[in-house]
Amino acid sequence: MIDAESTNIVIIELNQSVMVRGIKNRLDELHFKVIELGNNLSEIKRYCGKVQLFVLYLSDSIIDNSVSKSTVDAVLKDVEMHRQKMVLVGEKDYLDDISKRMTGLKHFDRFNLPIEMSKLGKMIEDVLETDGTADAKNILIVDDDPDYAKMVKSWINEDYTVNIVTNGMQTIKYISKKKVDLILLDYEMPIVDGPQVFEMIKSEEDSKNIPVVFLTGNGTREGVLRVMQLEPAGYLLKGASKQELQDKIKSVLAKHGKGN
Image 1 (cartoon, one colour):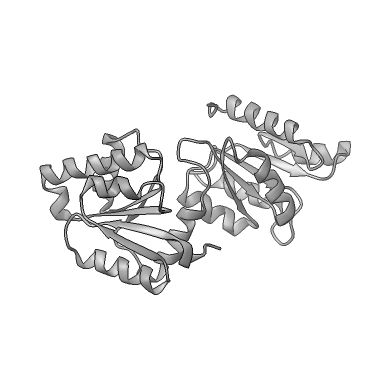
Image 2 (cartoon, one colour):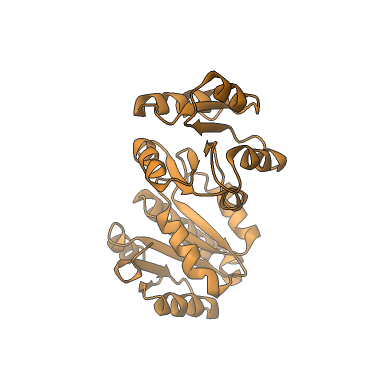
């Protein structure tokens, strides 16, 4: 859980907007520390490294103005250079255009309009809690044992973007919103077990090609055969070492064309 009162967020306001007012007011209500800036690049640089997040709202008037678009590009490049997290807020078509034009952006997320202000706090928390950068491979750990999941995360989060969910529905929700390069899936989970989650992943067009490695505590021949009958990308015993886990991940990513 993010401590809002110790989280500094810069809102870059290129022109006055009711939407910007709404975003600021909502973040104030949630007790985030909000700093408002215009398009002064020297001011933006001054806050780089001192805040947790930049938010840039892109209105229609900016989209249609070539001078303003140049300013937006300069702001994005400057924030990116300092490896700061940034959220772009705007119409989907314009955000798509930015993604195509500025392929070097690695540290930004996006909120397509319209935004439900009631969900803004959770959206901001999701961005702040995401480890790593967008150029790192994104690995999702699915395990109902928080201690084991956190240990696995600690073993690999220097090299990858790593997030944890604890059940099948959270898995499907996550992969519907985020690009995932590899899933580490607990085979034995209550209610909806690993094989059922695996089937859900493979039944969706957008997720069927994500490689899945089962994590299992059953190292018997019968147990391993039962896992591999589902044809996952691989399996790993829960007693495996840190090095074995790292080697397995590298091997699977390379095999599926997702290596660095």
